[in-house]
Length: 199
Image (cartoon, rainbow, N blue to C red; front, side, top):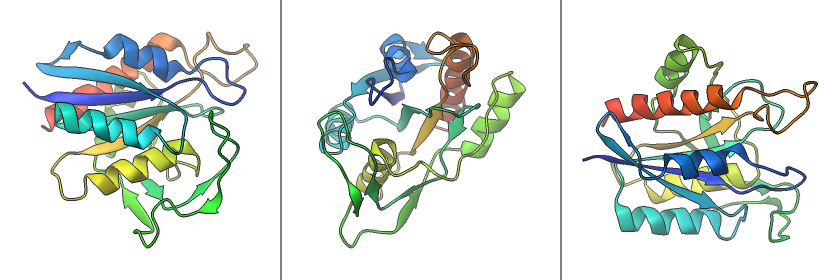
């Protein structure tokens, strides 16, 4: 049986919740179209997030890796096209502050997602979940995780990439940008089915 490893993040900065944490916990151990889904919740840490995910992937040897994170202020589910070789942003959950440092000294400027992101977006929209490709994963821990994982996998035939999800409506007031939680959950489920269909 094929396995997809799905990661989410804990809450961070001023966000009291992170929808990807509960989503990954719910997905862990389930089967989808004959594919086993394994989940892991990662710390919002430049030093540890990618290290933990790579360790987990080495142990379970998944056929694909789908990383999830909160895209606060976004209105759609957004598969990321690219991760860039830079760390910059507010303090992570361990207090580390990065101000323009490269993720990997002398590493490539960027890595492109190896997930079928166009097909994912088309299928999500077809099933009623607003989605679009994003051309920036930012410069915070999400981008760092995507870059490091793709760098690790560059000689392996394991598709991997990052998907940001918006606030869910249980997180914010009606004046804030959000999507219903069940819409996000169904959308990510559909994205995983797309990935599973390519394995």
